[in-house]
Image (cartoon, rainbow over all chains, first blue to last red; front, side, top):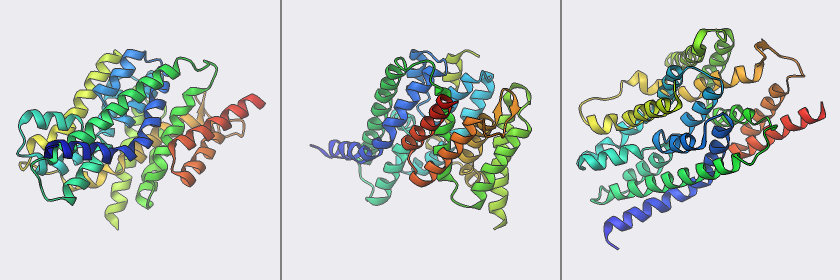
Length: 227
Length: 104
C-alpha cells in the first residue's frame, strides 16, 4: 500500500469506535423522520444533503409540529453554526489542496469526522497524505449514516401506529442536552431558553423557538463573560 | 414550504458553513465573541424545543402528575445524567411513557 492508502485506512479505522454511537442515532432518525410524516425518499436524502444528525432530528420534530419552512431553515442554520468553527480549525491543514478536495472534505466535515481528523492533524507532523486520513474518516461516517438511516426507515415502517413515538424526539434531545450542561453558564443558557420558550409559546409561526434559543445563547455568553 | 426546499436550503446552508473558512483561509477569523457563544447553541435551542413538548398539553400548561410526558421526561433526564447514553435514555423514557399510558 502506498502512503495515501495507508492514511485512508487509518482514517477509516479511527472512525470505527465512534460508529457505536452513530449507528443507533441514524436508526432512530430514520424511524422518527418517517413517524413525523416525512416520506422515505426525502427522509433518506436528508441524510445525504444536510448530513448533520442533530439538525435532521430537529427538522423532523419541526415538520411534525407544522412549523413554517423558513423558521425550520433558520433553526438548521443556528444549530449548524458550529461547523464554521470546525472549518476554521482544519483550514490551515487543507489550504494547499486543490479546490475539488476542499469541497469534498467540507461536505464530509461532520462533528464525528472532525473529532478524529483534528486529533490526527495535531498528533503527526504534516504529511503529504494527511488529507487521505480525513477522507477515510469522513467517508466511513458518511456510509454508516446512510445505511443506518435506511435501516431506520425500514424499521419505522413496521412499528405500530399507536405507539407514542412522537415523544422519542424530545427524549433524544434530553439525552443530547444533559452532557452539555457542564458548568453554570451552560445550565443558565438551558434554563432561560426553557422559560422563555414557555413565555413566548403563542408567538406566531413558532418564532418563539428562535427567540427562546437566542435568549439562552445570550444569557450563557453574558454569564461566562462576567467570570 | 415544501419538504424538498427545506432539505435543499438546509443542506446548502450547512455545506456553506462547513466550507466557509476552508475557502477563506487566512483572510478572516471567527470573532471571539461568536466562538464563545457557539457552545451555548445546543443546550439553548434543544431546551427551547423540549420544554414546551413536556409541559404544554393541548395548548395548556400542564404541571400535574397526570402529565405522563413530564414524568417520563424527568426519568429521561435522570437516565441521561447517569448513563450519558442516548439509546438507554430513549429506551427507558419511552418505556415509562408506554407503561403509564397502558396502566391508566
